[in-house]
Length: 394
Picture 1: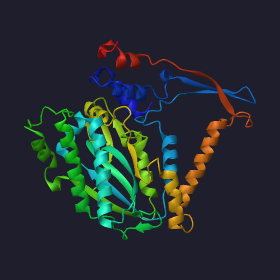
Picture 2: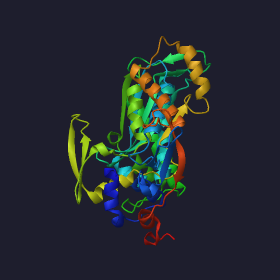
Picture 3: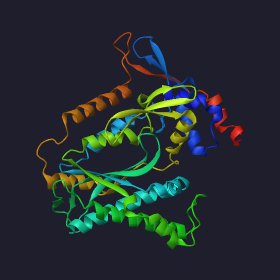
C-alpha cells in the first residue's frame, strides 16, 4: 500500500462531501494494486508455472500508475522536437483570482489556455511580422511544491516560425523570443476580457467572499488589477528541449505528489519534502492530515478537462505535414536528441514488446507468462463509503 493510499484510507470516514469526479478518482487511488481492484492471472505457455498480480487503477491522479503513459508521451514529444532554439514560458494568474478559478474550474482553465495561446501568437506576430506561423505546447499545472493552489500554464515554444509562404524558417534572436512586458500585457488584457465577457453573459459563479459588482466593467477592472500582480517568465532552453519535456512529463500523467516526497505519516500529521525555488534547497513541511487531503483534492480536475493542448503547427491537425516540412527547411545536421533520450526510447520499445508477448517465466526460463484469467474483483468498503447512501447517492 502506498503512503498516499494509507493517508486517504485512514481518513475515509472523515472525508467531506465531494463532487462525483473527485470521488471516482479517490476510489481509483485507494483500490489501486489491491485485491479490491481485481486480479490478473498469468500462466506459462511452456510449463505449469502460474502467477498473479493485482490490477492498477490507471488514474492520472494515482501516484502508483502512469509510468508507461508518461514514458510514451515523453518519447513522442522528444521525437517531435526540431533542431532549433527553444523557450520555456510560464503564465501565472494573480492570487486574488484563485477563488474565482476554483468556483469555475472547467470554464476558467479553458480561458487560461486560450488567453495564453492568443497572447503568444499576437506577441510573435507583432515582434517578427511576416505572417509567421508558430507552434507550441501548453501544459496546465495547478499546484506548487507545498500542494497549495497555484494555477499556471507552462509553454514550450520553438524560437521562430514558418513564413507565410511556407518556404522559409524565420529564427528568433539568440536567447531572445519576445519582450516579457509586452507578452505579460497581452496575456493580462486577453484573460481579463475573456472573463468580462462570460461574466456579462452570467456564466460565472461568483464566490461569496467577492464584492458585489455593479456591472461587467467594474468586474473587468477588478480582474485586470495591477501589472506587478501578474507574473510571467521566459527562459531560453538552447537547442535541446529534452530537460523541459522530461520535467513536464512528471505532471501530465501523474498525481500532484509522489510517495518519495511523503517523508513521514503520523496519526494526525503528514511531513512532505519541498524544494525552495529561491535557494534551490530542500526542506520539510509538516501539514495536518486534514489539510494535506484538502490540498490534494484541489488538484483533481473535472472529467474530460485535459492538461495538455497543442497550438499552431504542432496542433494534431497540421503536425504530421508541418514537421515533415520543418525537417526540410531546417536541414538538421546529425541527431539533436541526446544519447540518454535515445536509450530511453530503446527501453520503451523493449518494454512494449515484453508487455505484448508476456514477461519471461522465471521457472523454466523458456516460455512466457500469458494472461490466463482476470478477476474483476469488488470494491467493498471503499465503494460503499464513497458512493453509498452516506453521501446521498443511491
